[in-house]
Amino acid sequence: MAELALLDRAFHAIIQRFVHTGQAPHYTELATELGLSMEDGRQLVYDLMAAGVPGWIHPGTDYIASFPPFNNQPTQYRISVDGEQKWFAQCGFEALAVRWLFPRKLVRVAAPCLDCGEPVVVEMRDSEMLSVEPKTIVGYAYSAIGGSAADRPFR
Picture 1 (tube, rainbow, N blue to C red):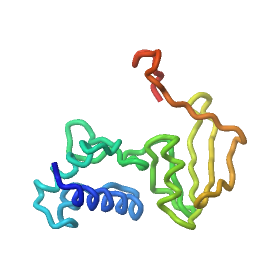
Picture 2: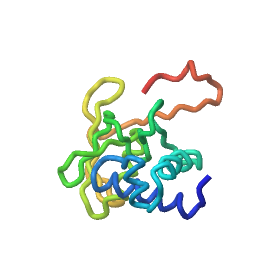
Picture 3: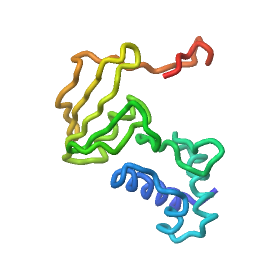
Picture 4: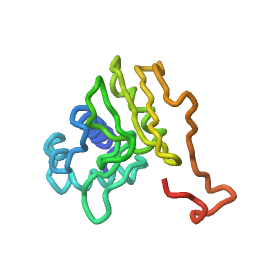
């Protein structure tokens, strides 16, 4: 397992790449940025996920698939910052956290409702919710207490 300071640098580098480009870096880019060998960069991505970051690597690859609050693959949670859409959120709840990575910027989350397909749009700036459509939005979080994975709807 990589040392904590290196894990922190890797986390910061990945988040910053997402903020600037809307995409995660490949491990070779991360290795170059952090002054590591390519293999050390690849292993660092795995070490970071093993350290408790609630993200994941796409199965059968070395590609970062998700790194909260962002998702590297398109999801229904489309994020726009000051009118530019190039980010995707990991989930509806994570989408609300994106605003803290774009200080003083207008952050818009647009997604279809997972039950009816109607549009859901939230606009935020820093700690302020500027608009919410529809006016009442309900989030869903699964809890394993009293249920099993078979009871969980795919979302």
